[in-house]
Each structure stands twice: as C-alpha cells, then as structure tokens.
Image (cartoon, rainbow, N blue to C red):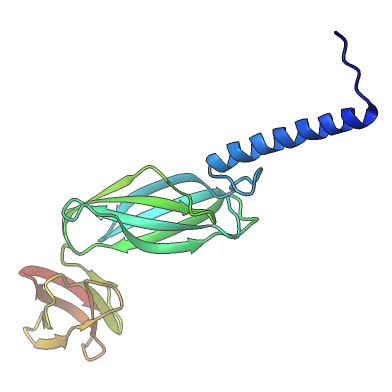
Length: 212
C-alpha cells in the first residue's frame, strides 16, 4: 500500500523527527556530565611533576587550556594520615594556553608525600590528575644566606629559642630566634655581629657561617 502525505503532514513528521533527535542528544550529553549540551570543558593539565627542593616539595604544572568559571585545587596526602587535603587553589582564565604554575610546599616532618590536582567544573563535576610523589627525610639544620649580612634564616624544626654562636676568638653571642612566615624556619638578627667567621650549634648539629 502506498501512503500519500500532504505537505502539512510531511512538515509535521519532519519536525517530530528533529525534536526526537534533539531530545536523544540532550539526554546523552546530560548523562555524560556536559551541560548545556555541546559545551566543552577547556581546563586541561598538560603536565605535572614534583621534586624535593631543600625542605620543600616543589610542584610544577602546565595548563594546556583554561576557562573562566573553572578552577583547580592542589591536594596533598601523606603516609601517616592517608587523607587528601587542599593546600592551594588557582582560578582558571580563558585564553591562558600553556601557562606554567608552581608551588613550594614546605615540609616539617619526614615521610612520603603524594600530590594531585583536582579540576572543578561549574556543574560540580571533578576530575583528577595522576599522583606525583616526594620523599622527605627530615630537615637538616641549615643557614642562609651564607655569608650573612643583616639577618639569617635557619631550618629550626625543634623550635630552638636561642642560637648561640662563637667567633674564632672564642667570643660568644646569643641570637634570639624568631619564627618567620614559613613553617619550621626561624630568623635571627646578625647586625650586632662583627665581620668574621662564626660557629653555632642547632639541634645538636654544628653550623659554620661567615658574616660580611
């Protein structure tokens, strides 16, 4: 039997097919976490790596592309707590291509640390990069700058209050240690010290430095 449709029926049938296809496409994209349909999420991490730098985990990554309403969160976990915590947030910006980011996470306790980046989209969807790892064997007493000028900064994991120093003539000075803005780092005023070589003891370790 041959069916004959009027022009009106043909138009209605075509409209029905188009609406059905659109509804099918909408449902498929919604289930995939894309809303509105057809939107592409632009923030993408191109590379992510870590390295131990002094007493810090140096983290560096590049974004291949970014989008305004999206952001990334740098997260850390350690072998003791085994729980991811947020340590830094970076808002993304449309137009940033191949942008370099870096972050130094100062470590005070020895152990193994893992890091990852969480990418958050406006829909609430989140994806994660692969983990990178850093092994920290503890803070060794260190002093910088050396030679010193007006102030010195010291890795002071035991929170020692006074830094006792002696010069080559066996003269002694007491340098009060104040906490700096960085965890585990103390600062001492060395302006009172004459120029020369000095010896000190910090956390049972001998330290030698010069004063200019």
